[in-house]
Length: 215
Image (cartoon, rainbow, N blue to C red; front, side):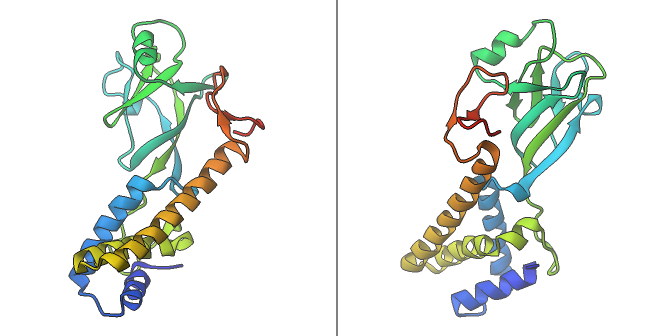
């Protein structure tokens, strides 16, 4: 599997020069931030339990999110029976505040997951979310996304290098290759979620479905 050291060597090869290590560290930091912002990939999905240990005040529906949280993918109650909690925003979420009954909607507010109506103490939820890939610190560091998409990291770093070198032509080439890879990976992840058919809105409590029934 590709490591941080391998990645740095590849960037040197593509740039046709040995780039100062401190510069490469800076390029890597910017590349990792951009990838976390742009990408939603299978390798970034994690599952965690949301329970009272994440709720500082049990009189509210606010739970703290994992430190590596980027975006929620799916939330469900692990009560009896299991059932999905819908994402809501604006008036749909406001309308649920202060109501009684089973939790049915949620919203991400800052780094908190807010569930309404307020869950009873002891309630447990399952959250599938996109997590920021671990930062590459040591030369031997790696992770599944770097292993499956080393080109993505290479072109993300080359974008930063050519920006620093003020080479607009080479930046444009690296940027286009990076964007193509992002689009390819994001599209593949969407197909895993919804299937090949286009996603359409339904009245189902499960929210967005594909027209072939995929989920």
